[in-house]
Length: 87
Length: 509
Image 1 (cartoon, chains in turn yellow, green):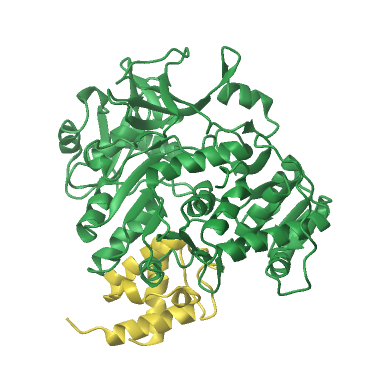
Image 2 (cartoon, rainbow over the protein chains, first blue to last red):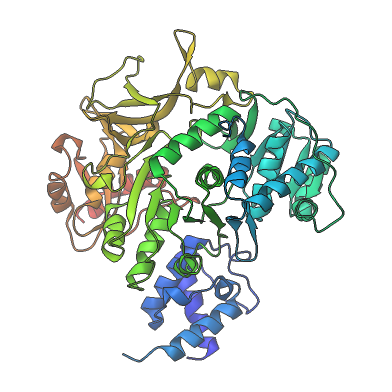
């Protein structure tokens, strides 16, 4: 999955979680400070991505740095999808 | 033999005497032993004294750095002054309210923007990082700690701002002996051990987060302060990395943990205790956690800042007393009274009243509110009228029914919306539920979001969980419950929804 597609999926997930339209996300946008996500909405975002693009997370590998910005989170999703064994 | 602690910082000094080289505090990037922690707080007391902080003065801190804040808390106690820890996001109007309300001599923060607010109000400002650097001995040597300021155990040490029924937050004032009693009584129930690692995902501005400092000092445990980001999706990995044994939580944290452990079977072998405060834990979350973590014990609790903690359930006691939030703290009493102030027998719902040495001094400069919430029985004996409603069973276990505004009367019965909603939640196929209390000629209405279940079937199934007279006569199925900015159900919008649902074309649903 390319980065562009991941960011679109992220926008859809955030639109769902935050109940307001989220579009045109740029890489440097910070999830906590700019989008005002909190620890609960962060998890809801993961749940939404689990449903939409089949992301499976390993809770033991999650790192706070991955949730810093749209860029770092996209890196994380890309790596997670790559490591995922296709079902 | 050492004498028992009399002032708050005695807790830290006793811990440093007992186990100076044990780790007291840690964060992802730093840690302090008990000796280092005690020494840093003494040096910071010197710096604050040099800054002009004296006994009785207020010092407000609002910073993301938990470790620095912890050092400051005990430093302020050493001076006989009073600290107030605010959430790092309290800025602008809310910060100005606090500065006007408690008139601090000093505001400490990481944020220079907060410094400008302080300057506008004639309050001195220091960066926490600078104070901490001086306290840890990295900078020029700190001034000598001032001599004993003569602080008494009945002097104030802490202000905690809380919102509630008042328009603006008000501060609950605690004396040294009140904090020490509350912390010791909680410790007697939770039994943290010297080899525990307590992972605190709560900010120190939240009173249960702040008390983790005192509980750790009482037991000699290591307290790990997690950031808000770490307590999100990475919560499980951080619990693993820190080898956490105890997790003080609130429902959102327990819900998150239940989601994470389902995806990581075999994790968290070290975690032995989860405590819960803030609101009731859902039965679904508790059973999911118990299934995934068979060695985990859960202790549910009930309390409010005005007495810190009122009741704690023994470990896993919720299995024997489902729905209860525990037993009064040792050395304290809980009573239930009616609207005229008469004591009610077991089984009857009324206002929860708390008595004991943990009942705090009262609200800062709010005499009318103090007369209402901290009245004196016989004009002499302090008690706390919590404004919460509930009942006691024959064994003295407390059951929380809701806030006053959650309660309504219908057909002569006092009914708790919280209780009705919980019963609806237990019905299979119901994902969320909210009650609109009666108003005027309209009776109570139950709103339900469900998955393939009809309104009548919900009402019928609820009979297994609560008395039939408590079940609202009208039940409306809806796609989603309207919420306000805080994520709570918006009752005004519910009322509007109820009117539109009265329309014939919609009520057919």
